[in-house]
Amino acid sequence: MSQLEILQIPVLNDNYVYLAHDPQSKQTAVIDPAVGGPVMDALATKGWTLTHILNTHHHADHTGANLELKAETGCTIVGPKADRDRIPGIDVEVADGDTYALGKAVARVLDVPGHTRGHNAYWFKESDALFCGDTLFALGCGRVFEGTHKQMWNSLSKIMDLPDATRIYCAHEYTQTNGRFALTVEPGNPLLIARMTEIDQLRSQGKPTVPSTLGLEKATNPFLRPSSADLQQAVGLVGANLVDVFAETRIRKDNF
Image (cartoon, helix red, strand yellow):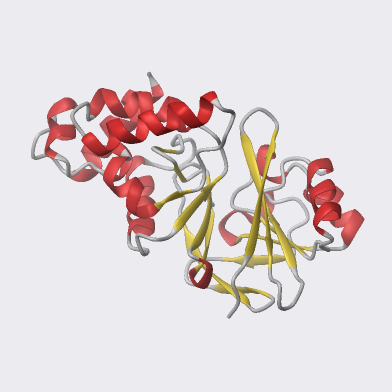
């Protein structure tokens, strides 16, 4: 097993692309390359060679540079089996419970649909790193475009089973807006209030709020907290099924 070196690359308006480098094998993956130029620049700066692309889902701001990078480097493209027809240049299809090795670093694949019909997350246990695309965000979760609220809740529940120390490498800098919504459904959560103060300070300095940790998300992210009595009261569903509470919370965020 090997500890990954992870480099976060901000691109477009609010996307994050990640380079994950295994220092033992020298293999390097890019996760969800929206655009190619910043990826190639970062590789050159680090002196790394791109060997893999790991895609979480098909949206263009996650796969837009697949073919460009593959043509330039000959890298192997890995993506969700459940959505293979919409992953440009896919070579390797992976599904829930599969493992995939990046050199000596091994990822466990989680199927986490809801945002799209096929969506993977890649958990590198030894590195405490989860690349989760648009399923889980810092203080948020993805919109339910192609799946159902039940699917999305099941996907988030799967992620919640991982260790609290897991770092959440999500694909967008949405945290400040997410937090403003979170305060409308759990205004009395002291950990959330404290976190928002820190987030506002970071953003005022132009600094990222990502990665987060799963433990912090469990304590402050409303989409992981449908069992919270305060949240249930805020959405008018005290004692309701957790899927229903989650769905109502997500619908409210859609209209926030």
